[in-house]
Image 1: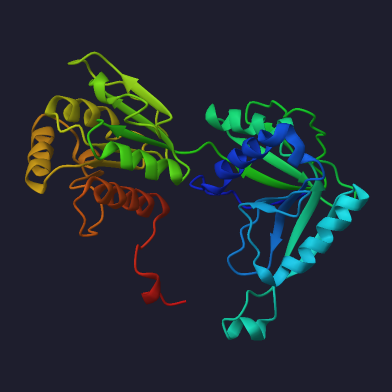
Image 2: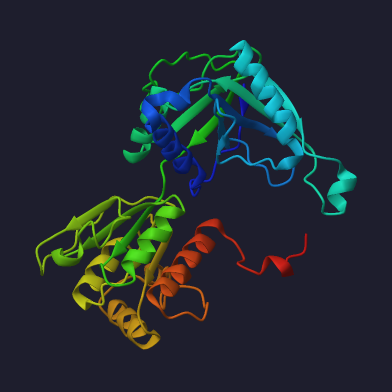
Length: 343
């Protein structure tokens, strides 16, 4: 059975593609779906090509999706798509991205990639099923049958449920692990919360905001939050279940909420816990928590002041700084300039 490596859960291309499917399925009562071909990258010998990326080749010749092979392979890909549209039968193709010599001059990509071309519709119920599983926070496996005449893509949820119209033959399929997105919990709906929610959602995270100020917990103020947890003023804030890979950012600027939330999440499974505060106030809170019994190893995981030093102090700048630190922490990245990295 062909298989991809376990995909990192921080990947916006997967939800972006599912949103594209819904968009295309709703256009012109499905007229653009007729003659559509699904292009799935299933093997890569090129640089910067990620297996599991997809695109739609529509009947009008338009290519839409999260897979971009560039002009190097464009002509060959279009000829292969036309053959599939004419025959109505899928095929496995190898696409040449260009020569190694051209790559060394910086003029082209290089290597070969393998793609499965499948006659399939953006309106196929699989895509809505996958979007619903992601919204529910479920892990799924996605199977793309390989070879000439192969059937449509199908999927299985972690709970064992099969996608609609599934043909569960895994023997000759490219298999993807699509984990549930990490939760990014924002504590407090202050001015930093909207841009932070927007950036986190763009990155493919599931954004949850918790606060006791109902007036600023509205869809208009937080349009990018997947979930808003509201309690009456003065009550302990609600928290979702957290797991490894999740992030918690406390920006409520309310000592009672800060102490309550940090007391519950520090030492737990979340991979990133940060407090947006001045260095002086953050250190004072850490000392108070230490004096009142919070274990030192738990406090060692608290990052305050939150974020990387980007020299920005606006709400959007703080949001970018905090989210960058979250990614650096979860991925274990050095966050050095790419221009300084030695290949």
